[in-house]
Length: 106
Picture 1 (cartoon, rainbow, N blue to C red):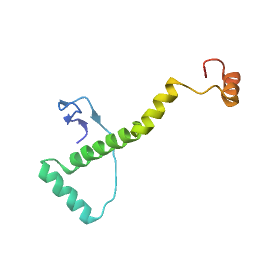
Picture 2 (picture 1 turned 45 degrees about the vertical axis):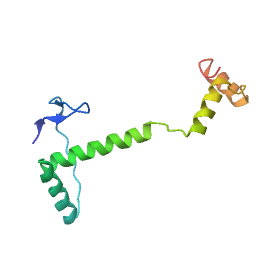
Picture 3 (picture 1 turned 180 degrees about the horizontal axis):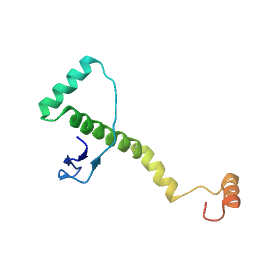
């Protein structure tokens, strides 16, 4: 089970570059284990590989969802307007420039 294993990459190919050496343990109810085993069998995977692939997909999706900024059309227009016509520096911005130097701010 440990060592280099074939896995699917995000571009649809496969790779043997990842060495699997770390363990991840979790407890589940018997009904959950049965369902996971059934899903793994239906995909032709071992339970461990099925769980690993499914968790990685969920992790990627979660990271992506929290990494991207999505704006409504109104929010997008307001953002572009602020970029095109930024407000004049206020005292808070001037204080940051005094504290951290000219690389912070206008």
